[in-house]
Length: 177
Image: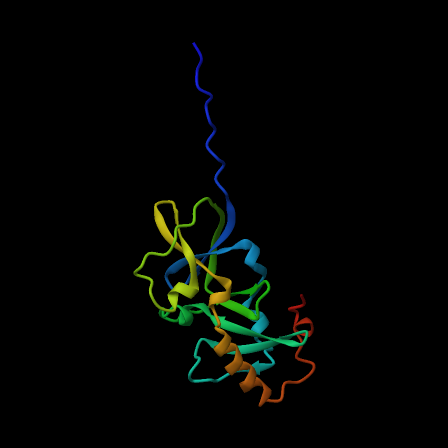
């Protein structure tokens, strides 16, 4: 008598994520997408404040090399009640920094569910999908979803009309990369 060979279940693909809070909502982001985490105290010497009524989620800009780095308020971006932010995520391979209330924890995600059809507008760009952790559904954000190409173009045009001091580099503000 021969028994059929047992097949091992494929190992679940895991991804390290950071759970963070904006207002009262918890979100997840891939830890590989976050280059650096800083305190909001580093914004105190911000070289340029931005006041564009059509883009209220962006209030600050820094220089990184030859590029502008825009700080997006996470609560305003997601349409949540504004709350005092305490940390900034400097996002890897992006011209965006994200202002958040705090970090809940770092953990591992083993499954990323596609977005349901109820997500039908700009939120399809904001999120990579959903995951379930500790019996809670957590939206997993897309780092590229915080500023569109059009928003970056608008911000760049606004900043180009404003004189930005050459000394306003990130490295000189303690935000060296």
